[in-house]
Amino acid sequence: MAYTLESVAKMLEENIPSLSPTASKVIQLANNINTPPPELTKAIKLDPVLSAKVLKLVNSSYFALSNQIVSLEKAVILLGLNTIKNLALSAAVLSQTEAKEKVDNFDQEGFWKHSLAVGVAAKLIAQKRGIDKKVIEDYFIAGLLHDLGVLAECKIFPEEFQRILLSIESISLLDAEEVILEGLSHCSIGKALAEKWNLAGDLLNVLLMHHKPFEQNEEPTELTLCVYLANILCKNNGVGLVMDQPPVEINPAVYQKLGIDASIEGEIVEILENEIAKATEFLKV
Image (cartoon, rainbow, N blue to C red; front, top):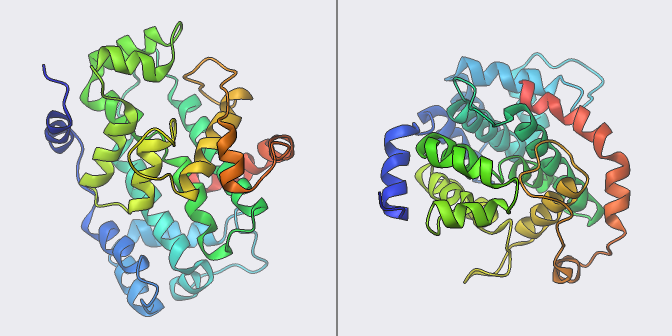
């Protein structure tokens, strides 16, 4: 078969459903900073499952609020547009990519632990850089979903994916994909899936460039650089399923671009496991 982005787009259309209309509407509304909370609440109420997730999250240890929140309207105001958007996005993506059965040689639990760790580490890097709290959850979600293309690859190329898993015992994931998928990778496949779902441009940048931020035609975003650094940090410390053999070298230009020192790695590793434990609440809702 021909391994092209055109054939990938067709296979994604055939094998992975679109996001639900409610989730798409909530994400669209939350992307507009002028959306009134009552309008967003009205959209969320159309999906009882999402409504329950919002209330469960706002009352979880992830936010550690002192009083229990029982009103969806109040939860929306407390969480804010950006967190609601990211909750709807993560819930929708996780439900659509959930494997119905185990895949040979693929440690799905380890995969999600690594993904969660990258989300946590990216958020910690952003916090240490003083990123606005209103958008800080974007870093967590981008890290959580950075390997979305791996899950898509598993669904649309199951036989090839098995060969890739066997190959990474001796070569890198990208090198294995380069050979077996004839130039495609989970990066390009992840971007194609995000485009199918009409996800935001910044996330497309992360999905495509989180391994090689300076080797594409476009400039890497700050979000991409934070996820790139977080991904390598988690790999080199063996957090979850590591699909490349550590140590992975960090491009020193990333530190310069982000205006941070390499010592930040040690600071993050020291608190990473505790923060991962808190963040698991995001996946449980």
